[in-house]
Length: 489
Image (cartoon, rainbow, N blue to C red; front, side):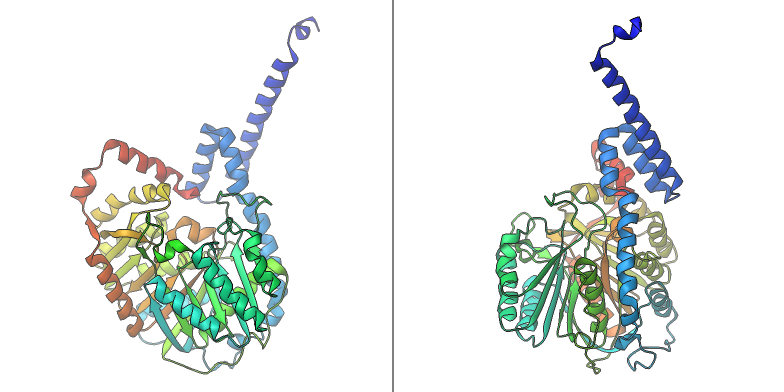
């Protein structure tokens, strides 16, 4: 006792707190290892926690797998509750005339379609018309016209919805339609739209509009980016007209923020049976956020053929048994025969996609990537650049978009298959975010997407091995360090 009497309470507290902290770190690392997830992600978390234990532990609890599993189970329960009614939807019926049951003779595009059907349970639907927008003003104008022509309901979902000029434009349109007696629902991601004040939306709710935030993190709505974010951008009007792609709602998307102007994005307008699937995705997310069931005939009207496009709407997220968009992208690249043209603002490939890109090039496929020249997420751009040298060595052509911000997310394969959506070519989109992409099978649309890609790279800056060799050692080290962190970005 005499020895202990000489030790101050402060010293004892320090010893016990230090030992307790390291026991927590050890237990956390043991838990991460026991989960048997991807080796790269496991190693990245271990290194972060071991070398910066305080920040590492906090990051893991905010972004780690425990939160993912818990919230995924809640999400799955909500989807199961909808299943009995979903099976009655038009595109779920065995006698639906728009379902494409027999595939054609083009083997490469058939394999992509088969995989998409298998991993998402999403049928390929015929009889659609599509319109592509590469200018935000054109897309916003078309969305505005659809909203103004609404006769029954408007369902809108956006990862980012800002309380700026663009946000007011759409909010006021939604208020106008709500006052006319139209059902209007707006769903935003709680983190992506953390700056959207409740006071800004009060006028909308007072007009009987229904507003919800997807998966709030904390009451204070912090600015950090935890996992399981709803990155989808969907607008469905009257169950007959749908929009999806890369555009959120904000002034920067119209080039009003000089730092990122001009803004380059890609968005789509769809009419036809494929709108059922966009509506279904919205209904699932809305039910999860609000417990309101939208699955029924009034929101899923009968639709006739309005065009010749074959479309699959592929949604993905951590609530699914497969990494659906990752599987589709991987198949599209590995099954390519002539060319693969990819546009993505955030490029952090996992080993499977990286190898698919390189082996496609080694097989003689013309693989080209259009990547951002400037980025709003500098760490992700650094991580992406760490892959450039090995891609160039494999014969892949890389282009940096200039000027302004590149935000389009597209892929075209062999001039016969193309996709536009919300998913980036990165690990977060593949495994953690809720995403939605529109897959279009057919040469007309794919040819148009190829033309857009070629127009984009004509004004882009082509990267070469010689240019990459001019980077400083400091730049290379920063890229390598960011790459180590890439599995958890």
